[in-house]
Amino acid sequence: MPWDYSVYPDLTAGQTSVFQKIGETLYMIQLAEHAVQLCNCFIFNNNADYSLEQLEADTTANRKRTLGLLLAEVRKYSEVHPQFDDMLREFLEKRNFFIHHMFADSDFGLTTDRQLAQVDEYLRLLQDDAWNVQNVFLGCLRNWMKETGVYEHLPKFLQQDKHLSQLDGKHFELLFRKKEDDRGNKK
Image (cartoon, rainbow, N blue to C red; front, side):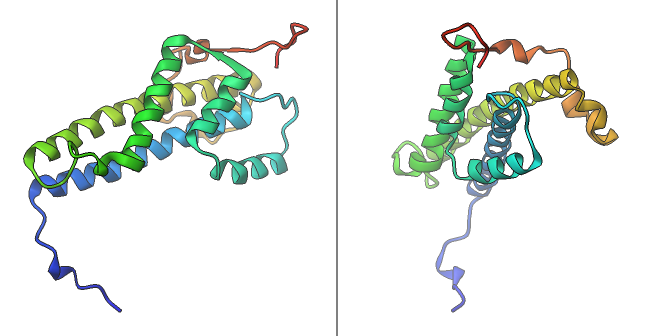
């Protein structure tokens, strides 16, 4: 049965703008989460040898893992700089509020101009956090690829990508330090 959308009032320009920003924010969160997943596959683990089969299995398994679990995995194998760890916690809290609770909160809604402004500002801050988290993890991944020789095997368009290239030399990898086990061996 086709749905009759004519029962709904027309959207205002403010509502349309917020709906667009909701989509942009969701997209940016997914990109950030994917960057964390990639780093977990290649950097933050104890796999010395990594096969294509393991990558495919991890990719399938990671699809079902929440951002909180992915970040716990990062912390399992590395010590995260305290300020960046605070940023990760804040990103997770903001992301979860956005996904699960935002429109159940009376301060956030799509009815009044004040509510729309609240949603818009919250999403702007969440997008900024997602961008920063994504860039840190992509920067770490890019550094790892260069250290391991993977980078030279990437297609030229990835090597020369303007966004990825600006991450070079930022030393985001210094925000993480491999944990050691009881014997002093790196995990």
